[in-house]
Length: 403
Image (tube, rainbow, N blue to C red; front, side):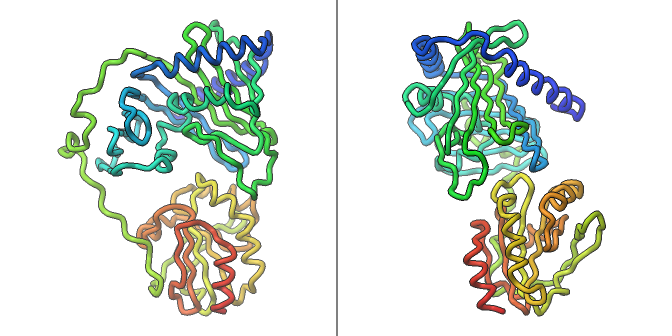
């Protein structure tokens, strides 16, 4: 378990490692033929693994968005069960959650709430959101062959030393593309405004030819990165007990979660509520009823939601476009601290109201994910409720129709 002090120490050590790699990396550059040979050997080694157990530590830093997270998990993967959506089955455990995929069902055990969450036949898209798989060794089984076969990806290989261990370092850039959490090559969206060059660094142990670290960065955001470190690798782990693959083995200790409320229906008239409102260092409160007579938009968000953050500049545009006597936008954060709200207030300078402590309200409205948008007419009746993000043209059209 990571205490606060351990997290700080680990972060310092990891940043030192990244800095060391940057400094030492490039001592000896290998020929193209040697690079291809090592990549082929590493790919063959990784794809020959039948079962594996390892510890993954993944760190994500987005300095500009006030986001820093260290995730540590012990992972067991069985690659012999290839006849399913993922091509393998796995078990993973971190301090809060246990995850299992048996080839048919994915289920998670919430260690604090003592509940089971079950997904029957998860789709490939659903696997993208499973944290133990994000930048895992299973992902690198997809990425490594791509580095060999995709001629548009120019890879260089040099020596790297970390501590007393010797490694191969592979550096390459993607342009207008990025690797998804499971190793799939994705296209940047058309509204992406940053530098489209995406640098990556893959570090492979010289003796074992197994990946040690995978780092993704941004050319125009040098402080930001996602890194995954693979440690304590065991290629001959003891197999988990057969009954451990089935959720029925845990029902004595864990209960199915209570079904979530569906997203609030169009036509519902909302009751009043009061939430704290952050305004330039001052804390005030805001109620729903004080905006009766106006079109009101409720934008539910959290800071770890990329589409939420991407919508912030457009929220200001929306509030500015419509007269404040007729329209009021209320952003409602459901889980983050007041200090986080202050960070985003300072960065984006919202001309709309930024509210927080909205967790209970989100539960009452059946908010399924983020961002979720709810639009109210002048009488407080729901005229639009969407879990598909911020669709500005649709929202503007509805506001105009109901003014």
